[in-house]
Image 1: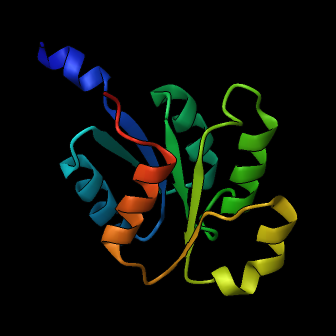
Image 2: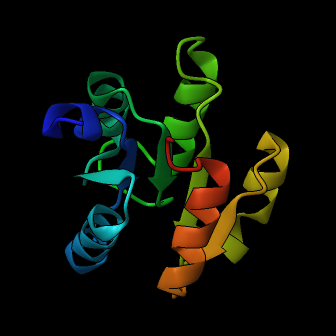
Image 3: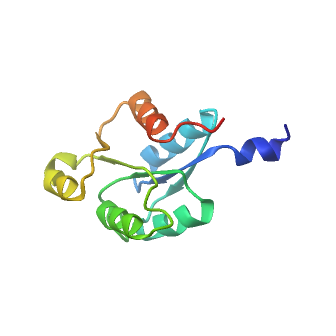
Length: 132
């Protein structure tokens, strides 16, 4: 198998996170996982554009980001028939304060910050298993 073919089979994880140390940790961790490649975006408005450009397989969203909030990004993803079925995992230090927002949207994939990195990777693998 050529390198290009192997690369094409990786699942693309878009990480919407404006906290650089967390964003880089997630990017590096997913890039070290066989079958995954991560792209970090620090602005909510750019998450949607990036999801479409890189043909993302799963999105990890923080609630509070510049541009659009994680909820605004989620709402736009769900309104777009070309990407609405893509899994979305929220991670936030403010998750408890947004219980009603999650409930109103039917969002159940939520991880509270601080999070366990292995748990986060396992959750993403369940939402979007690596390609064969």
